[in-house]
Length: 375
Ligand code: TYM
Image (cartoon, rainbow, N blue to C red; front, side):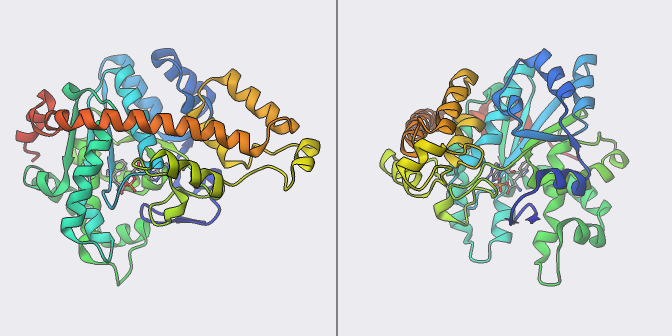
């Protein structure tokens, strides 16, 4: 198993990651505390968000009236897939429930530096394309600031320098696995991903998949010495690829992902062709032995996100396990849900073309942030 912010491979052992990264499991008590304030969310209830750092501290600050703010991001290396949208959807939910500011970093610099064959113009095209997808999630324009690294740098540079000065190469090497071949841009970049955790003198809470945690580890070592709080984080597992539940839906394996731009025909053919099935090889056998929803990608996608109704999910599970429901029927349920979701997403995306300016420059928080210089 390998999990870094840039590469995930092998069969992922999520419990081992908690130990290796030194994070804490999201306990039922802590979930209960969020639920008391914010109500329930399918991704919490069903264990998709499963680990954290100092979430209890962020909640305490909230209750004491000190508040917190949210921060998440996206590296615009290409079009976005379903996996990229999931942390955004959860972040939006937290914003709505806690009524807090959200900062979204779009790391055109990181992706240009990391991808060997990346062209600057190409990355810029994806930056705009991705920001539309992010805006379509429905963040509150009054409380949200979406920024692109290469554009915001002038405001941010003094504080980024202070951050960079605190991190030595041996730490960066140990945390990120940099080698002699790593370009020096990549070695500097982590300072920029740490910066937004210091946008306010409040505790920051970061919803993201667990692959981003190495940055937070570094942040937590240095934040207090710069007069800021150690960041809190809430980590999700990975949205699985079509090929099997162990991995990560990934841009670099094209057939593993459903893209936000995939039309109905494409979604149907990908799910029918590639979605790993827990069913039996023949209908007769399936009717007799039943299917295994625990390894079935279609069922797991329904469980993580696409079927939030517990009663309906249970019914699907029972029917599939007993052999009453066939794999084709299960896939059909998923195809319909995914297509409806994507259709609605794309409608919101079109509307977001108008709103995008608000998020980036003209909204209240946006304009405040645009002029704000971080020393
Ligand atoms: P990026 O573009 O690789 O991923 C964007 C966000 O999506 C999460 N993610 C996934 N979540 C579930 N299932 C998947 N298959 C999956 N693939 C990716 C990532 O964890 C991330 O939350 N360096 C970052 C950009 C960034 C950022 C941040 C992300 C800057 N600041 C703060 C999170 C929080 C990146 O390249 O993300």
